[in-house]
Image 1 (spheres, one colour):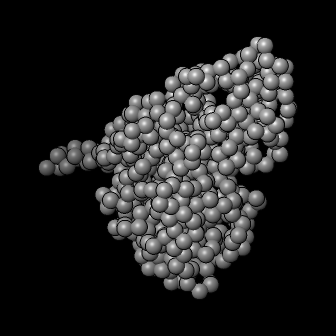
Image 2 (image 1 turned 90 degrees about the vertical axis):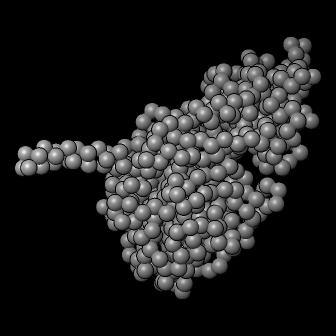
Length: 503
C-alpha cells in the first residue's frame, strides 16, 4: 500500500499541473469561488473545455448566418471558417454567444432613452466581422470593432448581479481605439434601456470622456460607469492614480460589493495588474447601496448612449467579488494567450508613396475614375486625352494612414495637404487639420476586391467601403439605411482597379 500511494502522488500532481496550465479565465474564476455568469469572446474559448459557438456572423449578400466555433475545445476561434463563409461579400457579427451556459448572449441593441440606433426600428448597428483582426499565439481571430452607432445588449439575463450583489468583470480591449463620446461600456446596465438613476449600472468604461471623472493626463482612461457618472475613484473628479493608457491591448477590470469597488488594469500582452482605485463607493445618493439591474451591454451606455467607439476581444462577468489573486491569475492567462496585431489590408498591394488612380469596375461605368471637383468626390471619365487639370484631379498619392499606420490615406495630387475623408458617409477632399477625428475619417484599409482589384474599406467604419453611386463618392454598406447603401450592384460599385496615376 505505501508503495502504491507514493506512485500515485506524482501522477496526481502532474495532472493538476496540466489542468492548471490549460485553465481558461472562467476556470480560474470558478476555482476562486467567483464563477463566470457571462463569458463573451469572438477570439477564443474562455473555459478549457468549451467547444460551443463563440459568435455568429450574418452574410449581407443573402442574410444567411453561421456560427464560428473554436478550432478545438479551449482554443482560438476558427477565423478560416468565417473567411470562407464571408468570401466575396461582407459579414456582420450578429450574436456574441455566452460561454457560461446561462444563455446571456449579446445581440443587436434596441433603442433607448438617450438615442435610437441608425438601423430600422431604432436598433443599433452590428459590428463588421473583419474590422479587428488579431492573432493569438500566432492564430488568426477577429475582435468586435465598435463604430459610433454600434451596440449589443441583453435585457433578459440569468444570474447577473442585481441590487447590491457583488460582482466582477474584465475585458480585453484595443487601447488605441477610443473617443470622447459616451459611452464605450461592457458590463451591468438597466433592463429597460433607460437611465433609471444613480447606481443602476456597474460597467467597464474606456475612452476620453471628461463630463464626469478623469484620470491622469489626457486619456484614454479606464473608468467605471455607475450611471450618471464615470468614476475613476471615490467621487467624480480626477484620480491621478488612474493612468493615461497607451497599451495596444488593454486588460480592464471593474468589481464591486457592498460599500466597496475597485478599478484595475494592465497591458494584456505583458506584465501584471495594477490597482488604480480600491475603496469606498461614491458618496452621492444612490451609489451605496447600489441598485444594479442585471442587463448586459457592449459598446453603449445604459440608456443606449451610442456615440462612442472601441474594440472588444473578450470579457466576462462573475458572481461574487473576485480576489486580487484570482484576477492576477486571469491576467497571466491573458498574457499567455499572446494577443498580437494582424494585417488590416489584403489584396493587391497599395504602396505608400506611390501615385495612383482608382478606376470603377461596374459594367457601363468602367471608363470613370475617382476624382473631385473642389471638395466633392465623384467619378469622371478620364483618358490620356483629358485636360491636365482633370488628370490631376483623378490622381492620388498614397500616404501612411493618418489615423492608423496599418492602413493608408490618399492625398490629392492637385491640392497637396488635402486628403479624401468621409463626413456623414459622404466622401470629400479636405485639408488635413491634424485632429483625431479628421485623421481617422481619412484612413482606409485596402482589401481584396469583392469582384476584382481592391475594395477600399473605411478604418473607423469597417462595414463601409468607397462606393460610386450616381457618380458621387460615399462610404457605403451593403443594404444599409441610406440610398447609397442600395444592395443592387454593391459588389461592383465598391471594387476598383488601382493603377498608375494620370499625373
